[in-house]
Length: 369
Image 1 (cartoon, rainbow, N blue to C red):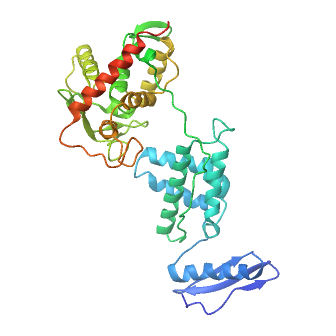
Image 2 (cartoon, one colour):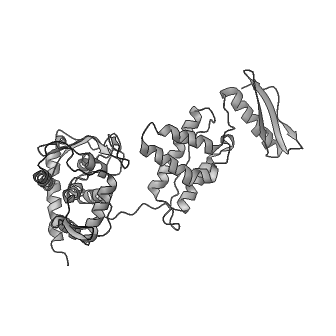
Image 3 (cartoon, rainbow, N blue to C red):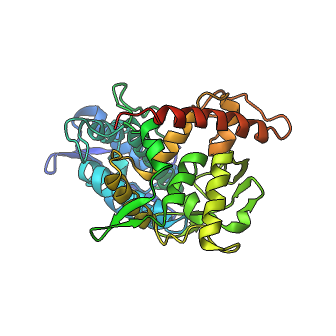
């Protein structure tokens, strides 16, 4: 600082403070409509920012958000679509009209608070805690982009998710539903009963905890004996990725029930190369699973909730054994941060998990019809 030799003056005609400064031969005007000396300081601060850091805060948030999301295309279609959605649903309606120079941390907090009060599907409940955390992360990423673009120096430190934010409710398959899954192969297609060609995909999902995209990306070359090597995932846009996060690429030992499913699928297809399940998209997998559930009187459980079902069964195991199975990071609340694998204990994990799985299936056989 120190290069500014003038100060903002009050213009009665326009009811605002105004200051003109020059930097590297370029002249800029900064204003503030805040009355009193606070407005003068605000205008001077804008001028100082531009003089010291080359900050140009005249651009609107909505235009900057479009630039930000366009840059997300290079990461992935999923990341780009998520950024566009958050911008249209939450950011632009509330703060899109603001100049980035007048944006405050409270404006950002108001975006999160508004989302907490008013959800898309359930206006009375608002978004889940996870969704609010995603919005907060996106806002911080946007401000990081803006700092790199030299349009602001704001660094939001205290954005919080409201304490009362609810966690999204998950439905998991109960023992009687799992008994049906492992005993029934029928589904409906165009009003007719048929043998479901994807029944082994559903069964493998619930016996391994694979994410839907990981299941679609699984190849025969990824199976070595009773070991599974998760090397890729197919996202909702049918793009092949390395998975949700750095922990997604992993290997684990299958329990006997999962190995039986693999062998059953091999017997059906006779294949030893290519994809294990020829499922073109996640949508096809989801719609097929929903038809199977409706035909077999299983409640509405999403494909991803089959993974939650697996974890619910596996919770009898130490968390240090569960994390590598499902590809969770240390800081995820699957169990403690300090669990480390000693040697290759995946075989012991598989044996313990198989016992837990058999106990659940046995409980399901006593279901009421």
